[in-house]
Length: 198
Length: 198
DNA sequence: GAATATACTTACCAAGTGGTAAGGCGTCAA
DNA sequence: TTGACGCCTTACCACTTGGTAAGTATATTC
Image 1 (spheres, rainbow over the protein chains, first blue to last red):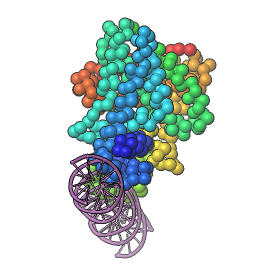
Image 2: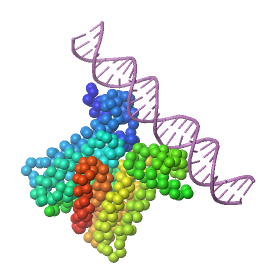
Image 3: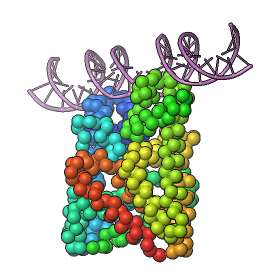
Image 4: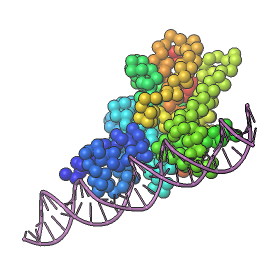
């Protein structure tokens, strides 16, 4: 079936692009992963740029999906936002490849696709800003301030997710595990401190 | 002179590697920047991996240099650490290419140089942890907690530094400038909140 | 003046790149 | 039975990649 092969291509491409970056992966290497030739990939996606774009589209969809997931009815908006950040952290930890790939896109976007740059973060950020503005004590603050607060938390989560292999290298498996065990509760603490202020 | 050409190579390589990543830059492209051939580069550095390593070495040296710079005599250690983070932020803003390259290294390290991975972050982190432990109210806390607090702030700063071009794309030049104007004071605030707790 | 070393060049190479062209093979509809 | 279509292959293309080999021109040293 076509859609199934397509999905397999996307899975393989997602992993490889996340690990080695756009230029570090050849379409032949992706196709090899399924035991097919690169022309099979080109048949489904047309070009390397297009399969890369499809991978990013799928990932950014998953991240956007986190937002409604965190919006539990009846909860105060501040708690909803906090839960979103914690969910984001958990997702980043469970499937770090996605976060890695988005980080690469942040670094590459401008240079790789000069004309057709897509800003996958945009709808994501807009929704987050709206969520923050739903918190009573944040309604009086400027959008710029709101953005700063959100982006700093986003940075803490994303940077950590992307650092795992390096941190294991630095501290060793055990040393890292020990630090990893407390990171989430410290993050929860930081979120409280960052959000709970007028 | 040899050392001067070498430095020019390092400058060009630093900029290109930061913008396009290791695989995205050919040694010929670096040499072109100086009007030389790639064999001139190979003469000075031996291989692509080696010039890349030299670039990273130089950058990580600059970042480590920030630490003694921030250690002003007589100031309380908490203030020294805060000033370090602010200096780091300013450096990241003034020369974002360096931060971008370190971020790429975080993503690539494991996969690009399987045997000879270098952990440029290591001495940097060790010194920071020592600085935090010099703060009275942080002396009783575990190393894992100390690490988490530091790394979260590091993430806020680094992620933002790496995001500039994307944020300009999302918000436009003016929209971004407006946000950039308040980011630093919000960061200062976050540092206070993150550090000023038992 | 001869030998050496440095800083570069041109010439070349095997391997790999993304992409095109054309065709094989099975399925399904008319 | 035929034709069209979807999925995939082999064959091929021009181009780029990192790296080697060999040489040139200039300066330094003995």
